[in-house]
Image (tube, rainbow, N blue to C red; front, side, top):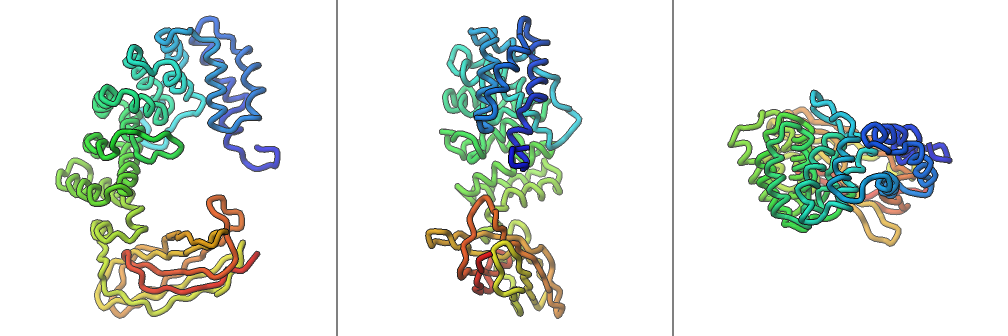
Length: 378
């Protein structure tokens, strides 16, 4: 917990208990490693550092007790690793942040041509304990041909964490990560090899990777998904899930071809009979209930969203798309949908500003109606 009583991720991840575990692992695996000395040096340096800086600091204090030459250091890092993550799990097994140390030190000390094979071996071992998605990228930028060759081999690895690294580590817009200098679209052959993977941990990464690429070339992504469907290598239900996940940004944008790929006609003859807000003038920190009534003359699958254009402090607007429901409108039976929207006063991604706002209802990617409302000060 932080001093103000709120949850602190950095304190949850890096504390006396977690670093005590790391110290014990190095003491058990590396002869002469002084766990007490490590803890006495590393713990006082944590409070002044943010999350990513804490990782670098922890690696600093580990490195001072390891060999100076990289091959020996790599051997020591592997000797201190805990057992691999449970191979029987299929998803959500990211590992512990304390086990990022081998990746950090591989980038610092092994990123040259002479050490490249050993550094990649170290990353292969380490990613089975904690994802090395951030640490493979500097090697890919420095040695693209050699690293791509290793990534192609890893796509067939028997450990699904290594296979996931191939997709996640090469994503065009991986959060928190440095940019990859290679053409992002050049990674598509890796996804071809991975899209039929039996583990959701890998297929989610493939779908997220495609979502990144859809922001660069939507038609290329849609073509690839169609080709995977024709190939029939992935379970149809899993590929349907991957397709929805991969196209989520395009769906928010109302991309017609993405809508059709998911079974929604952008030109479906849907009518909007009612759009209302209760209260019609909500307050910052409060909420409003949005009611939408839709009709159609024939059975019509619909994906219904609403868009709010929020005012920015400088006077500009930012559009945010929110889900209402996926449904089928039956003939002569209006579809009535209600959604509560909370105007969070403490939102961390953008600041709410009082004043006139626009709201629109979007069905199958097409805006059917737009209205305005006043957002009042809290």
